Length: 382
Image (tube, rainbow, N blue to C red; front, side, top):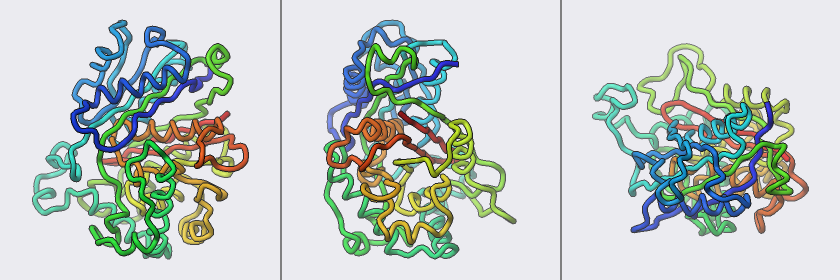
């Protein structure tokens, strides 16, 4: 198989854009990615597009050009973009196409996500008792983790403060006002121990990436970024995941994040020690902490020391969520993972501006996690 490389990235700002449809945001992101790659829409031979709110996201071709391109819709909750990237890369690796695109877009209404529990295979009583809340689940999960591994409330606040500070240097981020650790700790508790400024929020935005065969990349760019590995895993029996109606009896089974991470490292032929910069799913500050360990970047409990030492800061040993993550950018589900890819590509190219990490990063890592228990990992390198 031939390698797939990323030759173009495009990102529509994340936030709130009254009167602007999600498809228009997606078209803007695609045009930016095409321009970055130096290709035109008619050259794209195939693609994958994901969205939660848009019923037929493939209708974006009406904005871009009716070329007959096979543009397939995908959805895997918060892991949607990981799926789109994996399939766009796979189409190149198997020789189906030479030039592909992955697109994500969404326009969520204000407020928390809501749905009938039956769509997740959960009985109606679960919703009627107020348990069908992701904020509640993430609060319970990090509360137990803090108890078991000695994580402090201040560490939660340090994560949130870091991500808002990073977002302040990102002109496409949503929440660009830096918040101190004290200001985060002073915000109201929503689901203990998580406070208002420790949660991300649903919002609007779009992103796109253009991929091609590695042996043809020289025609388009001098800085191709290789898709080293992709992996997607769903939950296993006994795992405690989003929307679980009960806590498993007996020994806990590892999260799908652990499974996806291990599979990606193995496929890439590297280990966690080789990662120079990472984008981790930070639906809340506690999630970033847990995901550091689940992705093999540290051991359980080491986060307390690492975060206090500044290891995950832009200038630290392992920068995490350099663009502000979900906390700073919000989460339009279909686009969120492609925003992560966009940031890693900029970091590996050395073009991330004020938030560029020091040295010469070679390996970037992205991770997504969502309901009801699916995780996607993408490893990129130059």
